[in-house]
Image (tube, rainbow, N blue to C red):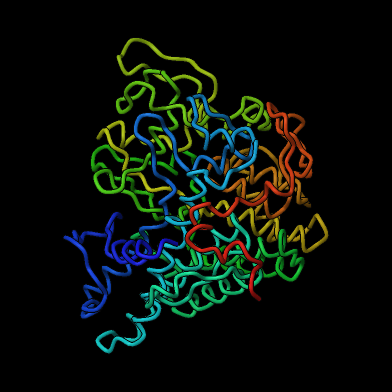
Amino acid sequence: MKKIAFILIWVSLLFTSCYKFLEEDPKGFLTTSGYYQNKAQVNAAVNGLYSGLDKYLVGAFGVAESPAWALEYITGYCTRPNTGNQSDNEFLNLTGIDDQNGYVGTFWSNAGFFPIENCNSVIEIVPNLTFLTDEEKNEYLGQAYFLRAHYYFLVVRLFGDIPLKLETTKDLNDIQIPKRPIKVIYAQIVKDLEAAEKCNVKWADHTGRVSMGAIKSLLSEVYMTMAGYPLRGGNEYYQKAYEKAKEVIESKEFKLYARYSDLRRYNTTTSTYPNENYDEHIFMFQKAPTINENIIHVHFLPLNQRISNVVQGNMGGAMKPQVGFYNSYPTGDKRVEEQAYYYTTYPRNTGSGTQTFEPYIFKFWDAGAEDTKRSGANVWNIRYADILLLCAEAKTMVDGGSTTDAIAIDAYYEVRKRAMPSEAKPTSISFNDVFKERTWELCFELKAWFDIMRTRKIFNYENKTVVDVIGYTSPGRTKAFEVKDMLFPIPYSEKIANPLVLEDPVE
């Protein structure tokens, strides 16, 4: 962490507004010495905590590059039609992730430790503000605890042993911090989420802020990860994951949309996305076309296919599914119907016929971008389908690899029935059943790599089986996955700025 930059950046981020529910327009540099003087300033500070959520969803102009896509490239389920840079190729080819890879640095800093510092500030100061009611303090603290947990959960899964910083930086001599063991980081994540639960925020928040549904959903995923690799916590944590997911289900606050197109619904009359932050969308990264544009629509367009009113030249082609992965879906699966999750043809933007191409990802198609020329669609982060499948998977593991538990089967079948409506409800489900369903259902939502890491399993789409990831060679690659591939290296710049990260973690 660069000594001067650390403090300057977190203070500036604290008051950055880039989400739909943020309207402040800060001018110039601020310090905290005169801040937190009234509710408006506290509200601005808490809104600023969200600014790090999608820092890895940034693009390089004209070439459809982003650190986010690395989390899909490494799975082997997709490819990059557009020419990639060295950072892309290390993930695409599994040649070994270098500690000077620019994407790795983004995940470490902009998506992790800088926003964590913001959260520390709110958690430290808000409880002592006498002009806030207890209810207002809980509202702010619930968001801050959740977001700090969210940031740490991202970083610890990607890097393993990392520094743990729970207080604001008050002295530049205290910047260098040793690593702590993974188990310590997870214990703090759970503690933060349990603190957030006690804050009694709304079960569902349609403005896009943190909700109780989001808190309990994230806690379920954290427990699932603690049950698997690298902690190997086992049944105790699988049971906890099951119980938390069940709380979300039994709240009756969320539901699956009837059609896949409802996930991205756009109203041309009002120029709005009426389903965002509702029903299936438990938690989303908030976007706006003129403040914090969503890059997914334009990046995922078919390369050099003139079908869009937005893209010019070769800005598309960041990602497409491997044809074998696309073909792995069961016969009759509605997710591979044209313009559900994928598409193979689309009218030319010149109005002269249609273009036909290999399958591309239509899941995140933004009709609003085609209408207004800029994408303001929110980014999916926690979906109800994800939680239903976590519930089902957790119970299969508690019961030894398969289960007849009615709640778990109902959760699995709710997702499966939307895809395969004529398929009968099973009387039992296995881990492999659920893992495959997660892979098909949550494809390209930046979930698959985390599932692979925590289970050490991967979907072999060539023969539609679930296999051990270590020793598995994805189609088109010459190198098999190794244990060392399960974590990213700490960035070289951080090793220089904080040499303590080169040492063993401190218990």
